[in-house]
Each structure stands twice: as structure tokens, then as C-alpha cells.
Image (tube, rainbow, N blue to C red; front, side):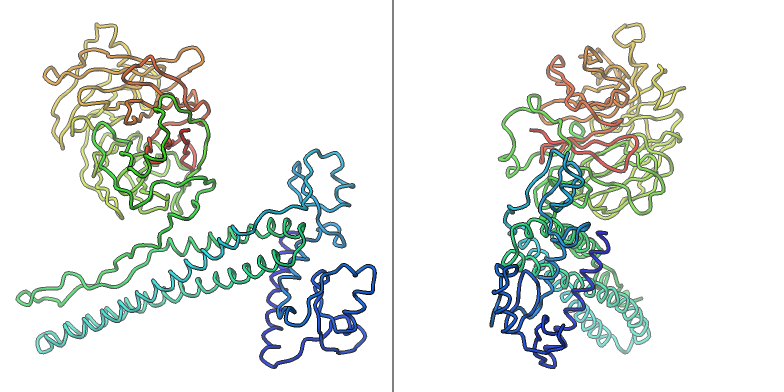
Length: 625
């Protein structure tokens, strides 16, 4: 029913607009619609808002005399609208789907339905959550949204014009270059001109598609603006309440369409690597350079559920060091908005955002096993699709990279990511840039690596000899520190000391400081001191284990904030724990319900935790408060 109503409205709008254009072109007078029923053609001198009909002078007089239509709102002379599409649309949207002769008057919260008086008596008498729609708020937000979308359309058009100008400049530069070397490089110039023409044709075709898309969206924006303005000026209170609710989806659709345009790669042709005259094998090369996109920080997120955004692209960022692999320093502007409470005293139990990380090329449901915040955005390791994915601060996909196996852990040293796999005895290194992820190095290993961390600017690897990363059974683990392909040290521990008994349960390692590391040991987490000279675990500083109502089962990913608090994922206990590394007795379950979390990152600039789960196409964000 809703779809038919939408199609009828769109058809009616197009038909009315066509009639309007024909009338304007041929200057045909507007005729009284009531008189047409008597085959009489009288020129209209008024318009009834309630009936959405043009009326002649006689019909206007009869309209006021009739007791039924006496209270209808009549517009005359200069107030007569040339286009009555908004009025008919308002009337149609205000009418009950089941009882077309009755206007919608109530909203049933129990069934999330808009109903008339008859619907209320017939089907909703026992419903408790009934609201009268006689009161409506301001429509300023809707009008402002449309104006904002229109401004951004103009910005997109201006950006495309700049690209056309740049293309013309390139042609002029090319002509000057060819002219200077005409005698010696006539053949190269012809080949180059052909290449330029082909690339320009491709870019021009894409440019025309952009313009067509912008024009279509702008037409919809104009139509919706006229509808809202007419509604707020002439509509009844109930009509305003009902129509604003019903056209809300139109604004959402327009935002989605516009954002898809904005997120498309914007490229122009530029001359690069211009050769010196003495070494002339070609006169230049052509390259597609990606233009900076229209600033989308003011947009609501494109994720499924959004109430906040990540930090602005213009906020200064610091590189990650080995002690804060998943945390960035807080900018001064954001620090003013932060709570003065320490993280250990603040709550984080409200899920505020779901960020979609599944891409068009993914064949499986995602499984995010590692999250790192980089200077370019958010880097995630997708276990089930065998990929590294880099997202911007607004969670637009910047690039993705296929991996040779299923990643189980990842660490980041500020410029490169190291990855280990569940099914491969190797560690791979990948250079992370703003637009690409590049293979940098691959290191075979004798044992199965299951976890990685950056320790004193080197790579620390946790190996198992028999079990796998998903096993909770004890194993003879081995710890190595590597620099490149060489092994700098093998970390040993006293197996006769009871305090080291649980090292055999270790399934994940995390560098806490310059001389401290943390192990996940299924039902507990332990912090050990690493001897720089002895190359062994000297002693256990502290441990945190499942107790009372704070159940920790299958401890997984770690993260650390700037205050020294450690965050631990309990995969099988479905929760997130917070432990103070300065006073391990100060601990709590900070997020009690989370579906199989395996990795976590602390985003201090926006005061929230970002969590990845074993199975799911979304990252989950929880805000501190």
C-alpha cells in the first residue's frame, strides 16, 4: 500500500508539473475544476486548500455558503498557487490507507502505525500507547537539511567545473611542450596526444554521469522543499505531523544518493615525471590524481546506526608507539568536551554506533580479529574474508588488501602492520599508506605464530607447538623477539616456579610498556616483567582472573588507554573487562553484554571503545560517559 501511494504521488507530481509547463508555455488560463463536471469552462479566481481544487468566482461563493465547506481555507488572486502538486500530495499523505475518506488523526505506538478514528475504534481499542497527532514541532530541521544538500550539490558541480578547467590546462601545457621539441619528438607527441584523448574521453564520460546524478538529486530536493514549505504554511496540524513523518524517508534517500556521489573517486589528469631534455625517451607521463572529497564530516554516518562521528580529518594526530598501539593522543579541542573523570570511574555500557565493514568484494560474513587506529584511519583484519581493510575516520572504505591466509592477530608500529595467520607458519609485513596497503616482507617461521606485539620497536611473536589459537588447552609456548628476519632473542621462563604455570595457557600477547608484557590465559590475564639482559620472564607483576560475577572466559584482544587501564575481551563470557595496570585490584566489567568480542581499540579523541567480534559485519562502538 505504501509503495502504491508513493508511486501515485510521484506520477501525480510529474503529471501536474507537465500540465503546469504546458499552461505556462501556451498561457492557457486555469479553469474551475468544479464547473468542468457540468461541461462549463469558467476561469478560476480562487483555490480551496482543503479540497485542493481551483474554483471560479461563483463556486467560491457557494463554497462559503455551504455549511460543509464553510470553514475551508480559500486562496484568491495572487495567492492562487500555479502548481497544486504539494497540496494534493499533502492531502493524499494525510489520508488513511484503509479508510480513504478519513484523515489520519492518531499514532499507535504499540503497532507503530498511523490511524484514523475508524481504525482506532476497529483495531486499536485495546492499545495503550495512542498519541493524538494534533501537535507538530518545527520543520526547520527538514528545510535546513534540504538547503544543506542543495549547497553540497552546488559544491560538487563547482568541483567538476574545476576538473574541466584542469583538463584544458593540461592540453595547453601539452601543446607547449610538444611545440618546444617538435622537430625531435613529433612521433612521441602524436602517441602522447592519443593517450591523452583516450583518458580525457573516459574522464569526460564519468564527469557527465556525475552531473546527471547531481541534477536528478537537485530536482528531488527542490520538489521536497516546495512540499515542506507549502505544508508548514497551509497544512493543518495533523497534516504537518503526518506528512513530516511520511516524507522523512525521502530525506534519508536523498542523503544516501548524495553521499554515494561524494564518496566516488574524483580523478583528474595531471602531468607527472616530466623528463629532462638530455634524457628524452618520452615527453611526460599521465596520471590520475585523486582529488580531495567534499568534506563529509558534517554528514551523519553511513553506517546502519549513527549517533556520533569519529574525529575530524583536520585534527592533529600522533603516531602510535609500542606502548599505545590502539590509542591516539587527545586533541585540545576534544579534550575540552571530555569528562574530567578518569576512565576507571566512567561508564561505557551504551552501544551508540554500528559501523559496517563488509565490502562489495567480500564473499563471507566478516570476522574482525584485530583493530588498530592509524594516522590514516581505522585498520582492521578480517579473518573470514582474508583481508586487511583501511577505513577513514568517517568509516568510508579507503582500500582493502587480500591476505594469503586467515589473520588471527595484527600489530602496528606506526607505518607498517604485521599479521600472523591461523593456517600458515609465517608472518607478513604490510606498508600502510593513505590509499594503499602494500606487501613489504614475508617471514617464514618454524612454529605456528598466534599473536604479535611491538616491543621496544621490535616484533615480539608468541608461538604454540601443538595447539591452535582457538584452543583453550595448555601448550609449550615459545616467545621470540625479531628484527626483520633475524631472531634477536628467545624469551624463556622458569617452568618450576608456580607463578609461571599459566604461561602455557597463553594465547595472546600485548606489550604493556618497555619491560612489561601481558598474556591472555583463558580464565585469567597475567603481566610479566621481561629482563633486558637475561632475556627471560623475571617475575609476574600481577594477574587478573575470573571471579564472583566478573566472569572472564577465553580472554582475547587487549587495548590500553593513556591512564594505564587495560581493556580485555572475554570471547566466551561475552563481555569487556577494565583492569588498572597501576593497581590491578581496581577492576570491573565495563561492558557486560557483547557478542563474542575478540579485539578492541581505545578511541580517546571521541571517548569510546571500538570492538570487533568473531562473526559479524559491523564494528561496535561504545561511548564513555
